Image 1 (cartoon, rainbow, N blue to C red):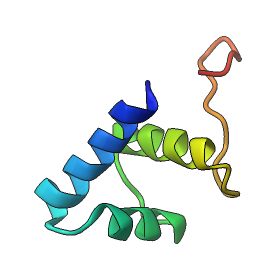
Image 2: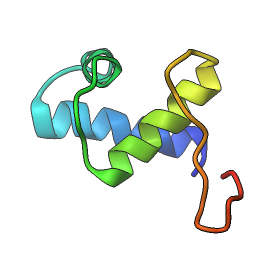
Image 3: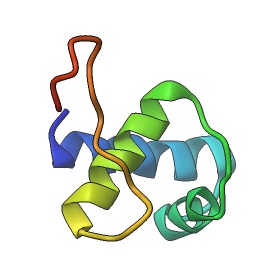
Image 4: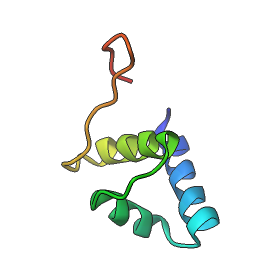
Length: 66
């Protein structure tokens, strides 16, 4: 997943589903807010791109990083 796709997924989830901002969703997920798999993957990609702590690299079933 590309960073632009990840940001788009997070923005749509925040605005269309919750009626909140992108930053609100990121803050909630930073605090442990549980989301579906696709949103969680997007969050991890976003966090890894920002170099913030707390995000872990994604591995596929073969142990390779995305």
